[in-house]
Length: 341
Image (cartoon, one colour):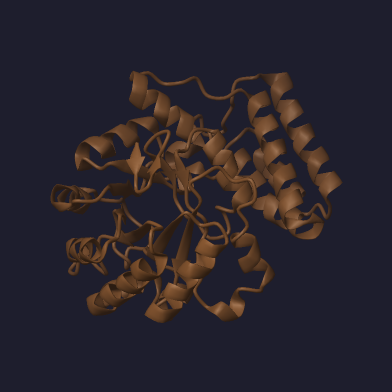
């Protein structure tokens, strides 16, 4: 796929998710078939540039191009400075967050709260595009503020006018948060009007749903978020289905074990021993969600204090599963990813 300034392997993107899409996760998803992965949100507040959290989020050592950094804020000058700061540190695409519905983001008129102020949107986008120079700027937003105020088409026009190079649309309003079902009609209307690539986002959790969304919207690409948590192989499954029309067999227990262990080692190296254990817990929980006997395992694992005990617990759990069967077993008899909309 041709994307602003780059030729991508495919049109399947990893959505930026706070506390999730760190460098280890982005690298793993790219290895498992994602064509592009967006960093978790980086603040535009220069006072926080030196914090350990912000520095980790801006760490792209060894990452496969294109390196895409998402910035968030509500002040045009600060957002412009944040774009320059991240470009100096390796960002090859700057993505602007106008889709996050979290209260702590919207409370400061950032994220999807910006959709209420189109004049401010125009100033922010123009400032960032000018500051970025030759570096492409993209935008992620929602269909609107609430069901009565769906203004994504206005935002598309503003974005194109100032030189934004692609637009991702999550098929919900800000007020919906992540409730209900994503709708794709506004994404289809945006695609019909757009002169730039449109990326569809929201509730894409299976290969069949991926094809349905592409057909319903005509979108140039798909962005997948929560369904990839603990299931990074979703990208190769979707790519295979879109290319062949047939479904891949699910990964065997031993492959999931290997992927998780590799992921854990990357997390330990990236975060250090103490923080690495804490961050790893949520990923282990996602990988094992719905698997037979996993509830008791997660309860015990979340109380383990160090890396060695965590490693042994994971190895014992997956070894026991593999001895029973190499085929995935879920207590609800469904792949949990189908429920991850």
